[in-house]
Image (cartoon, rainbow, N blue to C red; front, top):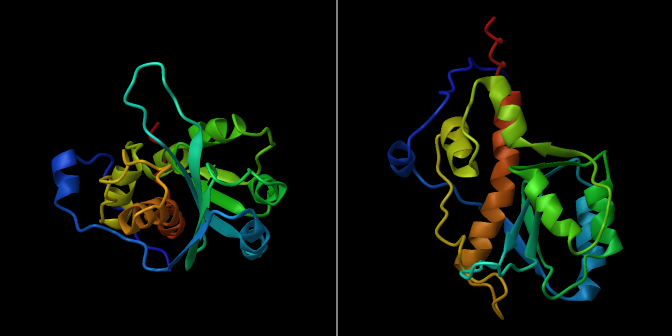
Length: 202
């Protein structure tokens, strides 16, 4: 079923704030033990479409940066949170990131991949960046929060973004935030594909 493209090109912070929040309602599985990596990756390898995102512990001091703390890979029903501050960026994970047959949907994918390569080098394959394709539908916004607002009519909460992603235990709110960020990319992508692209104005 296709629908008419009535996406607006931009949305203000004020308009976005008035929209209902969108949250991942599926299962969240934390992978923080090396022994659990293989089973998680086996499940993910059977998928054709995944949501993708990373989280990094924020630095509040100039010149101080941290490595990626968390890698999120989400199916439509289950989101895996790989705690990369606890486990290695394993070959099984890299296999998913390199597989061209598994589409990984994210926003600002290049930045996330650059951060992951600081841990271990790999050749990415099958990535789709919502920021890069949104203009084909006439959307000029880049942030995931605003892409979700325009495409889905729901906002993504950013309340946990600057929390400590290397904490001993991730809070329920952190887990939900991280899972939603990855999963919502698949929702946005699915919706875009059901709507005709905007013709390029000459």
